[in-house]
Image (cartoon, rainbow, N blue to C red; front, side, top):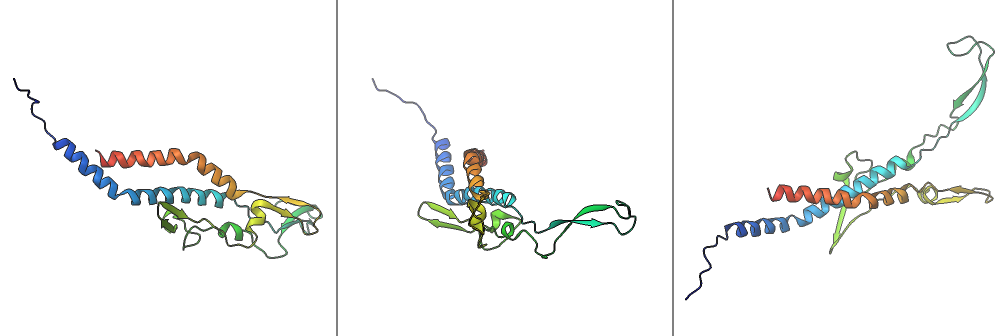
Length: 179
């Protein structure tokens, strides 16, 4: 007596194999998109966290005449900027690609692909960046100015949320590809 295995349709398996092959072709594109997503979020966080210098100072002023806020002879404080310096140089210095200060961070990020490594360098060429990041001695050498750790804290936040972000991106890719 012979045995019979019945009929089997492999069209579904063949379709799945083709979909997997197509997905392999999109691998580099997907990984680059993930790297750019994480780097753009990091750049946005570090820019927001970077302090802006305030070069103004308060002075006492005596009102010369009656006005909306003060009566003649009244002493009040006013903020002035005698140096003319404007803050924000450090904040504007952050970059992750060829274009600086890009509003669309992801498209301006320069990605370097070496073997299995995808590298995006976030940097700030302003000469005093490391002093603001990590802290420094005062000019007279007697005291210490604490660092702001704007990049360090931002990196830690990204490392915390990265698994969720990558999982969501992968889920969307799989849903689109295996409809």
